[in-house]
Image (tube, rainbow, N blue to C red; front, side, top):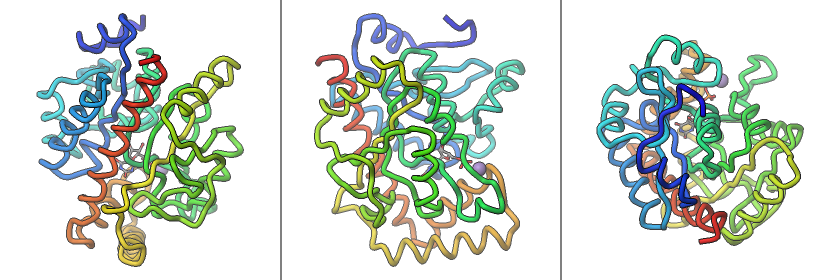
Length: 304
Ligand code: PSU
Ligand code: MN
């Protein structure tokens, strides 16, 4: 095993004895939500995974060690320190490890560390994708490339329209990443259930998701699988409200000259303010919903 990797005793035991494990990211804690809702949500997500028969493995880089299975104290630390923790994508990993520093893992680095540990299912809120204006800015999230190369199933609520959703789907098609709608033919747009875009396949059960993962592995096809699970109807935001907030947040981001890895955290915080906190509530609900499906899928994959 990788000399840097650190597994919590619970995660190590689960992996050794074939119990289902679900990976969770930590950028959503440090950069995606404000304190203390970030910590409360992270702990609720872990509980939801336990309630559905699997073991949660919150992933982060702590003191230069890629860690699968953070303690509640570590989650509190990552949440309280917030944006002061490095948002760690693939390019940051070697430097943080060599220097013994901390990092909040994005979808990309969470996939990398999950795979190092032998965890196959990962639940989050939203992924990074092809940004609007990427034709000029080249801003395409490293999450796209990671999905293309690392064999982890990522269960999310689709992508926010801070991204260019049609281009994001094109990119995933080019990279050979299956995009599955859970219980829907339509790509969910994170805060809302509808984007008007079609996914490749609709799947209705955790067992079938597990079967697709198994088939991909059996064929030795590299890369992950993206499962898009719509936010439950009762928590879905009105499209006009959320889209207006996103448009305004994008305009303010351009005016402020923000670019690079600061974009997504800036937009999430701005959208939350513009919606009076409603977007945060939706965000929390959809993450819990994804955690449940991920636990069920991990159980199905392990034949439980
Ligand atoms: N979308 C969210 N919340 C988040 C992120 C995306 O609703 O916290 C985070 C995830 O960690 C994702 C990252 O991997 O932002 C993408 O950042 P970038 O676009 O800089 O690659
Ligand atoms: Mn980017």
